[in-house]
Amino acid sequence: MAKAPRAKSKAPKRKTTRRKTTRKASTRLGKKLKPAEPALEIPAILLEGDEPRWPGMGPGEKFALGPTPAAGPRGDEAAELPEAYGTGRLMLVARDPHWLYAHWDLMPQQQRQYNALSTDRHLVVRVYPGTMAGHPSTEVHVHPESRFWFIHVERAGTRYSAELGYYPANREWVAVASSVPAVTPPDTVSRDRTLRFATIPPEVRLRQLAASGKQMRHAEPPPLAVQQEQALAAVSKRYRILQEPVSSLEVTELIRGPVEGEIPFPPLEFPVPPGGPIESISSPLGGEAQPPKGFWLNLNAELVLYGATEPDATVTIGGQPIALQPDGTFSFRFSLPDGDYALTVSARSVEGDCRQAALKFSRRTDCQGVIGAAPQDPSLQPPAAKLP
Image 1 (tube, helix red, strand yellow):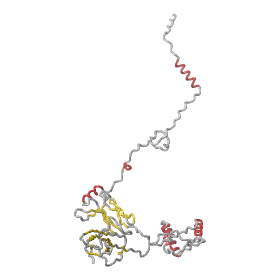
Image 2: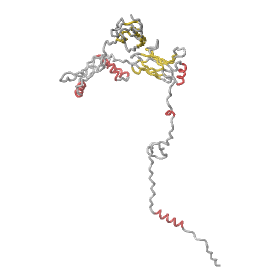
Image 3: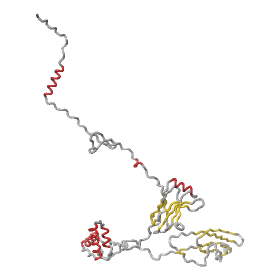
């Protein structure tokens, strides 16, 4: 029996796009393809204020261990030093031979409290020579808001102590703080002449000075004295046995101490110029000139009144008549010690006409150092005294 033929499918044919793609891909794989090169990445340059990148190694990040935390304000850097600590201490130091510097550590509220208790509305600094006993040599009223003051003192090379306080309504001194003593340096040339300086004459050249120094350097050192050898041996034994460090200064002091000044050193000798030695431009010892010995000062003052009027008039000074010259002039001298004085000069004519002048005088003497009184005519009297 014959088989019936199969009916042909009328479905559309599938496209062979995938196969062609596969073939093309296989064809490409058969060839040697070059891998694509990665793009070159240029790191950014970090400028001031830029944040560092992470992850990645940029400029300056070779040894970076991790992300850098954001920098914030630090409390210790932003804090300011306190205006005062409130210890209540008074410090006194010497600035120079005649000036002291005083500083007191008080909080603003403490100082305002003391100012309110003071009848002067401010604090006072007292300065005592030596210890705080007796009367102060200087008393300074300071500004109400000030916590330091410069104080002038008369004597140099003196130990001073200071005291801070105030005067209440009853004017009895109330101390707030006291200082340790401070010594002012002397204002004169030191009397210590153990150290001597040599003055190089101006005509000596530097080459000659260098040659003299070389001669001294190459000269044989003087032999050590017996005391120096013993001291050096003691230092060496101490270092070997006790193994204690010994400084060069200690060695020098131990060796030099017993026989200070026994080893002579050759002095520097400079050639004399053909014209003979000349005057040095500085003192022979290189220091200040010595002050004159026996220096003194005496001082006094007199008052001289002089004038003129009619020759036949009558003139009185302080109620006492004085003689006139033939031309009507007159003059009179008085001694004038410190103090306040008043004199009245009157002139009366023959007809009875009167002229009068009231004169006032004052003398104040401020001395620095010892000043004596110059000899004066013993017959002179002060202006307020009665005339002979």
